[in-house]
Length: 243
Image (cartoon, rainbow, N blue to C red; front, top):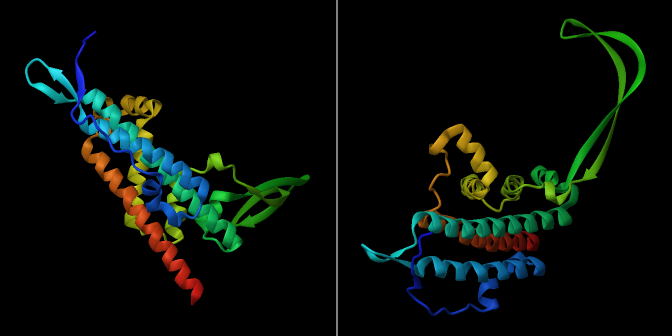
C-alpha cells in the first residue's frame, strides 16, 4: 500500500442554482427530463471541480495533479454522465416527434418505437416447382402475417437515437459523427468491452489511455453544442408552424 497525501488546490466551491443548470435545456420542454439533467449536471460540475483541483504529494516534485490511472477514472465518470445526458435528450426529442407526427415521423424515428413482426405459416406440405431467375425452385406454399409491435425502450440504443434525431433535422452528418464518437467513448468504459478489445489488440487497444482532459473537453463541447441545436430546432419548428 502506497500512502500519499492529497489536497484540494481550491477548497471552496460555488454550487450552481437549479435555474442555471436547467437554463441551457429549457427548450427541451419536458419537465422530468429537465429535472434529471439538472441533478446530473450538479454532480458533474462538482466532479469537474475535483478533477481540476485534486493534488497528491510526491517526494520529488511536490504537489502534482493526480496520476494517470486515478485521473483517467475521474475523466471516465464525467464522460459517462455526458453521454447519458445526450442519450436522454435525444430520446426525449425522438419520442416527442413520434407522439406528434405518428406514422409521418422519419423512418429512423419510427424504428425507435415500433417494429414489424413477420410470421410465416405453411399452407401445404406438398412441394411445388416455380421458376425463379431461370432456375427451377422446389418449395412449399407459405403465408406471411405482419403486425406492428412497440419497441421496448431498453432496446433503443444511442446509435439509433443519433440517426433518428439527424433525420429529424436536429443536426447534420458531421455532428452526428461527434455524438457517435462520444457514444464509442462511453462504450469503451465498460470493462467487458475493454477485455474483448485487449484480446484482439493487446496493449494497443483503441481505448488505452484515451480518457484525458482534452477528450473530456471535447465531449463537454459536444454536449453544449447539442443544447444550442435544440434551441435552434425548436425555433425552426415554431417558425414552420406559423407559416
